[in-house]
Image (tube, rainbow, N blue to C red; front, top):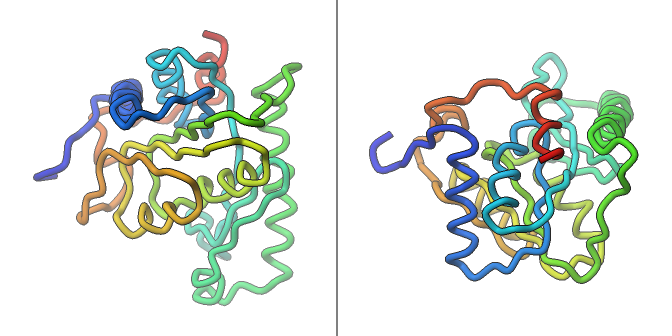
Length: 212
């Protein structure tokens, strides 16, 4: 942990992200958090910058026999990001990928509908959008979210995360307009190691951040 700051919790990380966004002169119009872990940070960013908070949803597509290892991700609108190196390295076949893609696209859609309830998706045309999560490892879900947002008429899309490995952050910079990342440690093993409190966020808790 030498040389890398730890965050007290997700709210603390979100407040520090908001400070970094302000210091970099990013005049955000709306924050979109990636549920579930991104919502406490998104709430802090939205409150500190006095902007609305909403969500952007994607689900990871796990490798055969290793669901935690992402070979891709799909957003709630069906936008797909595929990790070609992981796809080949795990000997995944197209039939498996398509089956998991269909299942996770449905799950992402249902999650977006559950979180929004009867609210419409926000209008993004001409706006500066900040996408917030609690950190990235491979960045699979963030990439799917960015892919769907890049198809909108948003004027600028910014990814804001507290921590991620250098190679992931470097690659994400080519997939959006700006990446704001507070820590890019070379000794990265997982997002949770950079938080003092990194407990699971339930759907019920996550949704409360949208109601504030």
